[in-house]
Image 1: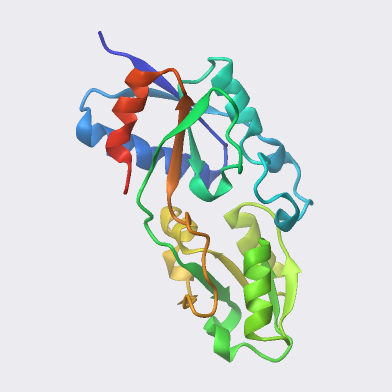
Image 2: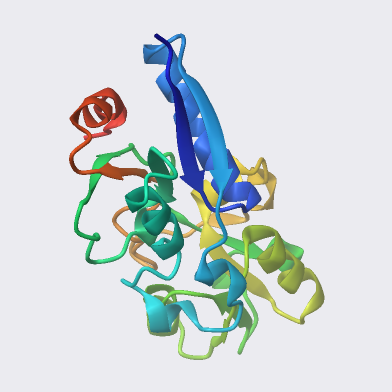
Length: 221
């Protein structure tokens, strides 16, 4: 008997592209795979002001989705792997982490300037403490401006808010078909990316052994 799996995700265009990626991969192994996408607003989607550097390692972008999973309203959840909280809620497990499609941080800049070509005291939009610290270590003159929002909103801030550049995940731009906006994949010796950047995590109930086994075909190790 065919089963339709309910997949929980954030509602952003990037999150939906990530779910689409998981679905397409599963269909390569299970031709009759049937699904329903359940969009869920997280606190992180509603709060556009708290700096990412203040909530790293928390469930800021996952709590509401994980609660729906525990209540049985969805069968599994798809997250950006780097958004996972340090502590997974009791009763849940990460069934698989996919192989990264691109681990680099990308520079998107005005006038297509690479990072070494940016003007003195350039204003660079960045979110995580990792990005902010590495950029300042590379050039002390950089003015690091905290930015929040989805990828489209961050690109709009670059175009309208007087920034010289922004730093975002190259994988996000790729998934959204915006790879042409990448001016430079920043070398690792300048900016070391999050170890899970570009990977997706699929989360399920710990006792759902059948689904865990089904999803493990996506594990990228």
